[in-house]
Amino acid sequence: MIKLLTIIGARPQIIKSAALSRSIKNKFANQIHEVIVHTGQHYDDNMSQVFFDELDIPNPNYNLNAGSGSHGKQTAAMIDGIEEILLIEKPNCIVLYGDTNSTLAGAIAASKIQVPIVHVEAGLRSFNKSMPEEINRIICDRVSTLLFSPTKAGFNNLLKEGFKKNNPGPYSFDNPKIYHCGDVMFDNSLFFSSLTNHSTTVLSDNNLEIGKYVLVTIHRNNNTDEPERLNALFRSINKISNENKIKIILPLHPRTNKLLAQNVSSELYSTIKTNERIKIIPPVSFLEMIALEKNAFLIMTDSGGVQKEACFFKKPCIILRSETEWLELVESGSAVLVDADEDKIINAFLHFKQSKKLKFPNLFGDGNAAGFICKEILKNIK
Ligand code: UD1
Ligand code: UDP
Image (cartoon, rainbow, N blue to C red; front, top):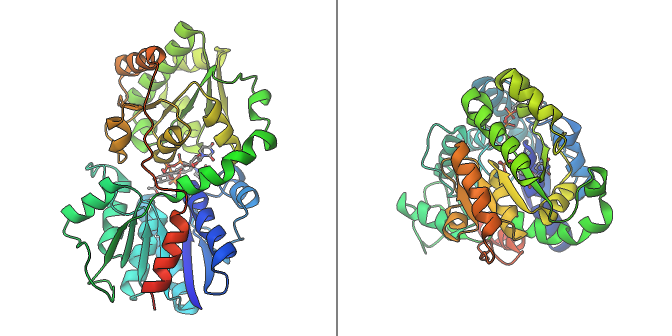
């Protein structure tokens, strides 16, 4: 039996962790014991607890309650707490997801006391170090022992950075192993997709008809914190809804909700609030989100996860960023990068309105990434 310590903290990590926890419970319960540490980075019920309840994730064994704060303060509180738990639990390895401050804290705490790191979602790069996530993911990859990349592009990034392919074990900090293994988010979307139609009323609750609305999410720090960008995004949303007579639904991240009134001009703010076709709602549960994604006409987002889910559910995606870690989506023609540029956003919408046949390649594996990761952990972590 090996002990694996999982760090989660932000919404997408909680969701991703469901795939591994499910695989451990169903196939590896007598070989892997999972201890879950929630850093408390996200703490509102609709950013955290809802996913435990809905996705059958075991309750965390520890919650550090790190909460919100500057990068330094937040990450420091997490490092402190994670180190203490690692010393008590003495796991065989730590599992880290993605690129948030919770990931970074886990990487620093574990590497300093030589606990092997398994990084799920390794190798992704935006090549833009002004993104806090880019720093977090690079640092985490540099100190990981097993690196699981969801895509070929991620795997190739690691090769370009000097990681080796086909190197023999045993694997360690100084001899890491890299994999291209598919995406645990795809595992989850496949697994939960069939449950959504019966178990959510999010469409009828919001008077939405199948294929007749646009789903929007915005939370990336440059979009929320720079008034010029946030104004351009909301001007575009308003224009698209008016000129195309289409409804827009925005489950809004608390970060954006807090900054909307402050960073959007008062005139635009009241226009949005009084536009009957635009509906801003609190963050929704994962099953509700899948229902919104599956039935949308199109998705506009700056989220990493939602970009991919758009492709999983064969929806065109307008990416509200200047670059993406998921370049394959753009190369396939099913997604367009528009930054926070009003003209580009509106042109992208018109482009997809006229496009009849889009290609949605299967870039993210076979839905069994979590099982593969568990097997490789068992083979390579002692
Ligand atoms: C974090 C991640 C980002 C990820 C996102 C997923 C970092 C640096 N960023 O960004 O990569 O895409 O999570 O959603 O780790 N807040 C609440 N309630 C909550 C959580 C947050 O009100 O439950 C508000 C607070 O005002 C907080 C702000 O949102 O200051 C930002 O939260 P934080 O966790 O620092 O970053 P995110 O923008 O959520
Ligand atoms: N998500 C959700 N409810 C919402 C918005 C997003 O369940 O209201 C899910 C979404 O389906 C995806 C994940 O959260 O699985 C993406 O998280 P987020 O956009 O916060 O972060 P990112 O992926 O950009 O790091």
